[in-house]
Image 1 (cartoon, rainbow, N blue to C red):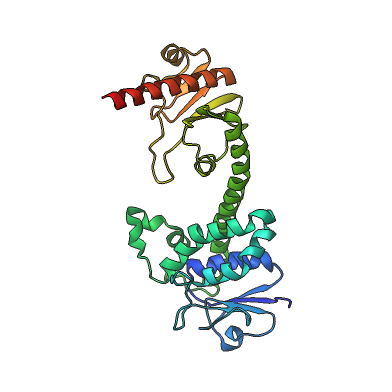
Image 2 (cartoon, helix red, strand yellow):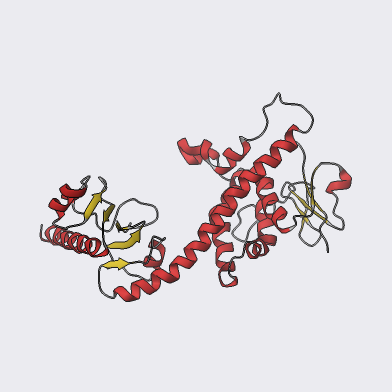
Length: 314
């Protein structure tokens, strides 16, 4: 069936129908986006996809609302918003439209649902209070998108629709950036897995370029790895590996005497010719060459092992 109209409600807007519109307008670029509460528009019919309005959910009939009772629920009991319903039905096709490799489609669909779609669903349904984000509550994506509504006294004809269109393009940027990042992460995992195999029992992982690596290291169970080196814009970077995704604590920090030093001072402190920079927080350093970066990494490993031995003995 040819989709000719994408229908959502008129007036003010929220993140869920904005983000739903991002998905649907990518899949059906020739369809007209209609914002209306008129019965003739929000009643299912040929060529229409209706969402966040209509008080019914029937994927076969093309209507995806969540304001009726009972609210459509996920298998785990969490409520859907229109975004979750649209993502469940159209997300796989959307990812294919963005040229995500077929082998990664299911994985990225699940990941995006859990990390991006579900939070929007929960906030929209009041299942999570915006205040749960603490002082950052005003910087969540739903809050930022809703801040793009026109002011209360901007009542000129078409103001809401114009703001909706502008906000949808902002929302599109965030959705597509998230998908690109997740797709890149899957590509990186294959490269990091090969590099882990090449490293063997060594404690330094060498990568061909900068890329996300922690999740692949964790999946591989490569707990012995402490540092990563890779070429970077004409020099080489030496970085630490965090203990997990919810902490800034590293498996091992770079040596304390290196902190905040550059060039000759860092060369003297480290004993490595070509050492160029070490961040004051000791999570990244820079060297002029691969050999210098590897030498710094090996010295950092030795320092970490000495520290561990001292802690164990003490």
